[in-house]
Length: 264
Length: 299
Image 1 (cartoon, rainbow over the protein chains, first blue to last red):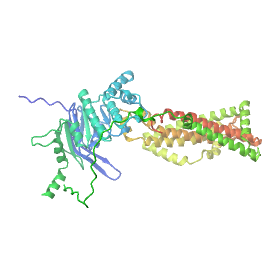
Image 2: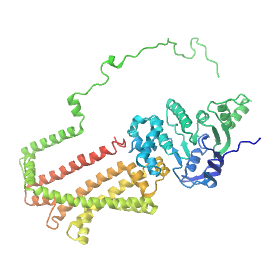
Image 3: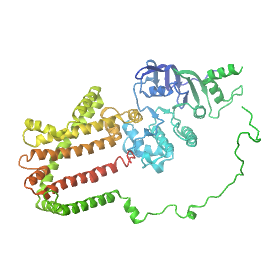
Image 4: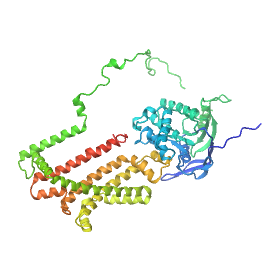
């Protein structure tokens, strides 16, 4: 019997080392990181702060070039920022304050020359409705709550119908209740439109809930520790251990060992 | 985990256990005042223009009383006499002509100053050298009073509008360029990344992201530039007098001082103030309301 043929990856990150300069130091953010993202993946990059996950996302976004290795989207090397990879940031000020909710979405479509005029407006409204903000289409961002602002940012990104969404801890600045709701909404949207998302987070529960595939990274400099599968329900493995516990042990293994030696 | 301490006398404090309870909340209509319109005078007191108007009336009143007590129209004419001189100046068309002359010159200098400020800031945004150029020039020229350049301007351009426009440009350019530039630089990194994400580069990036995002600073620059230009113009006209046969408000003030027509001098100053108030409260205030306030970028 033949194994089902694996499709070609949408995004290939191959041996990427990222370095940036601060005023005094040359910092290596990630060291030889490799992973593949396939179409319709909810690919989560998980790691503690300092593991270079946000820097990695910026590099995929084209905002910085790797010092080593390559990144390819649909087989073509990534050169600079582009509307085929759309960002959703953590900060609420990612919306243009001088544009209404609807104008923020049409702005993205028109600036990237994807659509214009009536077509752009119709597309914008379609996605604003998807995030349940149709009532606020003509509101300015400063009148919205944090959760609503993030929903607008998600609508704007989705409306682009880009190859891949790049989400940089989009719910980290929200309160716990809103965050939970937004996570469910994101999964709902995924069920409807099957976008591909590369999602960066430092929260283990968020990673197991959102991701179907989780890349674990260790800090200083960021390196790949492994990739795990998830089904959103924090599954139990053959040894009876929960996924989130396994992740916790993997990421904080060093500390556990220390404790074991202390207690033993 | 450590074992919980037993609750005997002298042990650690624990809060008392109380019964739980549930309640139905009262509907809004049962509470009396939840929201109620303000009284007329309360609403009037909310209007900033009304409060400012009141201040101006009080100042006029104090002026009138003081001038009457002093009883020396050569030093301080009464408010009434000033208004009268102002009114007769308006009716004879004398003040209006001077205002038109002044404002025309002002607008020319202001427009040219803004254009140059735009060019300089665009250069500064596009290259590091441009940035250095702007920073050096603004730090060198911004503290230099425009009026100090007037003697030089007279030698270079002679007696005429060009000399005045030259000093006006100098007074507008650096203030506007400085504010615009610092506004551009304080645009958040997230917004910049958003702009580049959707493919904006070069001039489109400046127009669609930087200018609106820096608009509060730009507007401040425009206001400061306007005030500087207006002051410089009146001062230049005072020093410089009439150019090519038609004078402005500064000249009106100077001329009437020479003829010891002090109420008319006050009327000239009064006009300068009125125009300043008009521009600040009607033009700039409305631009603010339609832009930065509406966008929540300024409260």
